[in-house]
Amino acid sequence: MRGRGPGGTRCGRVLSLLLILAALQLGSLVAPAYACGCGAMVPSERSRIAVAQETSVVHWDGRTEQIVMRLTVHGDAREAAWIMPVPHRASVELGDAALFDELAEITAPVRETRHHFWPRDGDWPFAERDGAGAPAPGAAAPVGVVDRRRLGPFDVARLTATDPEALRTWLEGNGFALPGPLEAALRTYVDQGWEYVAVRLAPEEAGAVLTGALDPLRLRFASDRPVYPMRLSRLARTAQSLGLYVIAEHRMEPSGAIGGREPEVTFAGRLERTVPDGAVAGLVGDGPAFLTAFDQYFPDPSRIDGDHELRAAAADTPYRTVRHRDELLAVGGVPAWLLSVLAVLLLAVARALRPVRRRRARPPV
Image (cartoon, rainbow, N blue to C red; front, top):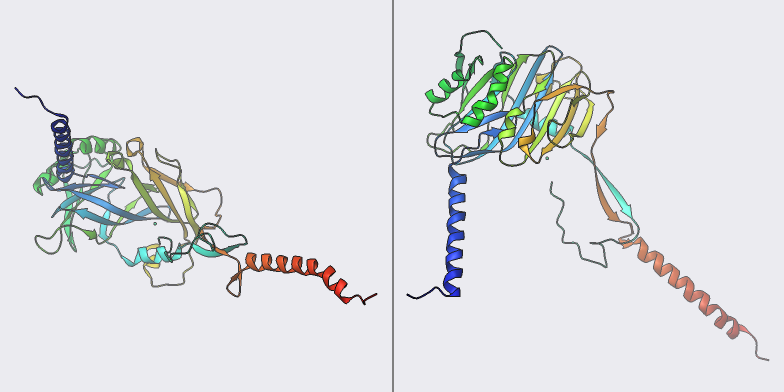
């Protein structure tokens, strides 16, 4: 019987590695990605969907909270269910996509130019610029469905939360299966007497895949303190990023990091009603409004241990992010350091030539 040579062993190892990688890739295609920001996404069987970006706005007037969310998704799912826990019975309507454009413009960083004297990497003569710019950030009611209606491309159901069985019934009736880990995670909200908003997502074009930015949804519910649900994000398999706009009477801040890095404020300031008929004005109304925007990164989502409870900051201190662009100081297009060096050299030459000129200027003896 002939033994394997070194070449055969190497080929066998390579083949085994390729089979393992193929199995992992196949597993990633059929595994449901049911965790996303403040809610949960459940795709249909043997399909996948992931939330590439989630942008949310929280508005609180001291009695009522509104959350407007816009999801950007990708994957191969033709339909999915999105579940959002809420502390009180919520009304649901379509949101205004212009809201996010207006807020992005309001909170855009200020761009300032800083000049430096001596050349750095990328400045002449060390390197030539390639011209590339920087990259442009409980109810006691019986278990069941409270109501159900159509909102644009969405099938929206409001469910009581006295038992996860209500959610399971709705999901199974719409062709979805409630994953075990998600059911366990939702139990905390059930114990707190929260309810669910369940939305069936499907493209308007029959047979199409869910992809790109979805129409925003606007939820409104009674709340004596603003809260942004985040607990379900602990089920995510990859690092999560949160971008949140908060509009209230005063500057707001999260009460804690809830297992992520410290939230970073990117904007804080009182809203000026420069566009009285815009989407922001439509959300806020006539009351006082202070806008706070912050970003937060969760490198290990399994450490998320609660929801974001928002509170007033110690002071309404304004803040705006400043993006600096460093440029080499120049005069008439010529680097200032080069002009200075040339001036020093010319002065040194002039001083060196001064004795020679004096000797030449002396009359002969």
